[in-house]
Image 1 (cartoon, helix red, strand yellow):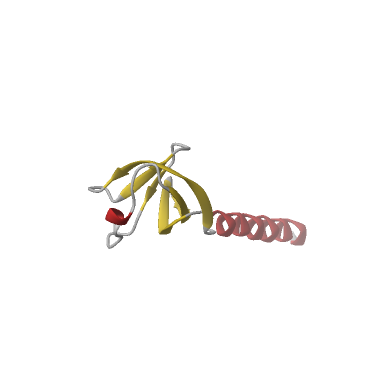
Image 2 (image 1 turned 120 degrees about the vertical axis):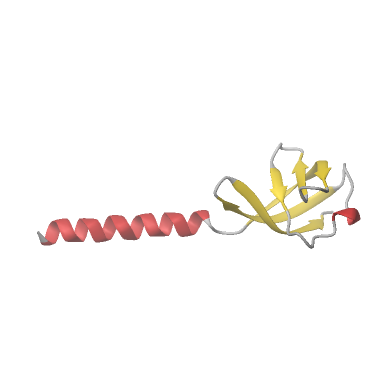
Length: 87
């Protein structure tokens, strides 16, 4: 019985760390392929769409500009917390 309990605890702990790792913030650099002001999102040249915060000033960016996006995966959405011009 103790062996089963230990296995369950180990499995639960391992899965918990996996979920925490998936929620980690990530940085991606790329070139803006398109901007959707209505959805407050940008699509980079790799095809990934990043959703930006409602108060984000998209007007400061243009298609073709190289940017760095700070984001995390929430479900299937790439939820950006910050986007800056990259050099």
